[in-house]
Image (cartoon, rainbow, N blue to C red; front, side, top):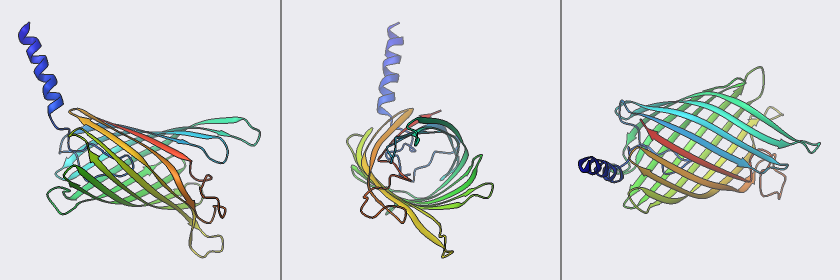
Length: 268
């Protein structure tokens, strides 16, 4: 019996001491360049809470991601997307909706390492098929690890086409984060995000910026053998664009006053 207790204690110590799989996330909006090793699998639930617009608004977006390492420096993922929202209509009543956001497929290739090379770099592509639209998104990922500090920058372009003759939408976004590793398992940092929505101008003059917003706030992460978690709270700090009234300060038509996101990774 004593040997059994010793074996369990040793296993627990090993769980705490071993480093986490290299794909853990330290930011919730920015993707780092790490990829899963070939043949490994991870489940990653993502929940985003969005609150506050011109009228009462609350929305929860859920994505269930299945990630797997394809080859050295290559990984892929499959997402299932769902959302639930509540909005207050002109009559004062709150309308609740539940929406299936379709499926998404992600491909990511790592080009350089944030520790061994001057900077880490990767390319990211994601496609989405939903009941009412098609979408494609591309990202360039840059990160760097120096001692107890980690930095990341993403640039992204997304195209969404509404099925059935609806309008198309273009989004240009950038995210950046800086984190301090308090220990091998825990980090604390700040993350910022800028999102710009462009649509075809009514006069046929091409794309025009309709909505834009900047979000910024704290992010915390924890990782250990077998799982990791990251949480951020990012209030809107600036709104701009043709659809935003002059002097408004925030865009509360397209975006929310505050967004919060939690990511959980479970290694299989």
